Image: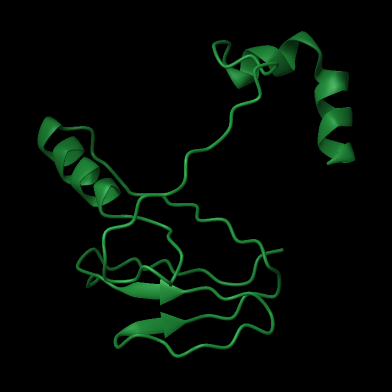
Length: 115
């Protein structure tokens, strides 16, 4: 479900902090944080940054990517280290997803539909 685009075609967009709370969430926002209420408790952060392909542009894009983060509000303004994740050892982490999907497209589609 799409609910908000934070995109801007303006390259000089100022740095900003945005809060995407789930339904029913109530708390005071820190100064300078913009809120967009999410209709669900799950959000995705998808980003696209245009790059011309020059080494200088790649360096600028990598700098911008390093500044993008999605963190809980509780540590706002302080360093944040997420808890370590758990990896299911039965999942093939070496073969590209597209390669695994092409081996058994029906199984991949069925798995997506189940989840």
